[in-house]
Length: 227
Image 1 (cartoon, rainbow, N blue to C red):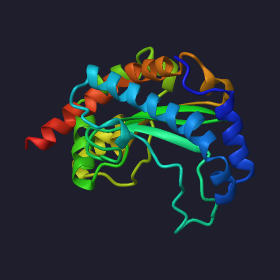
Image 2 (cartoon, rainbow, N blue to C red):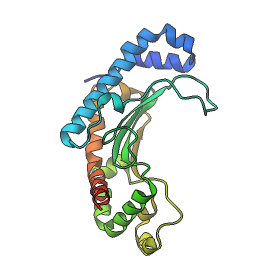
Image 3 (cartoon, rainbow, N blue to C red):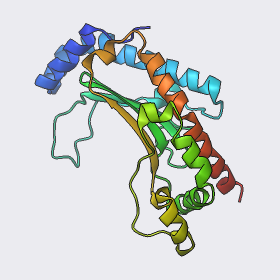
Image 4 (cartoon, one colour):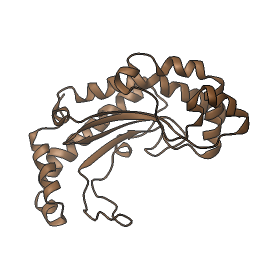
């Protein structure tokens, strides 16, 4: 199913060149027809597909989307509108740092497909580090399997300089023990990808390849929540 069209690209490129409220107001109907509505349809389809496979994701499609208006209060860039939109499927909300998520970023420049544990709170983060340290063989088997490597390459994420002392020796053998987040990311600088008839399928194929990583961290989260 094709969600976005050349009209979407024309609107978004026009917005990039004329990122003002007056231009947006003059082109609001094009925005609603060619960007907002297909964006919402894609979000709904992705949410429902993930929920069918993983019922614990109870987020509603509207909650998985983002506003096109930028928050300019603390930004040097005062342009009012985004030229990239995302869809993030968390367990009950977009920004749920306590559970693995799936996310995709869409723009006329291309598509990025990602997911994982983004910003767990310190107590959960250290619990996850312990889980990684004591179950590193399982994680490595998952992280080096196809098609995960083919799509994402490796598990990534910011690392801390310090970890609990009892994990230091483990960290020497398994560098992912030092991570503060465990994420995966595939970026495609291909303007045609946004217009693909199989955009939804491509995104879901990526997420399915990454599902074992998410399941690994779901298990770790479950032991944390039941302690």
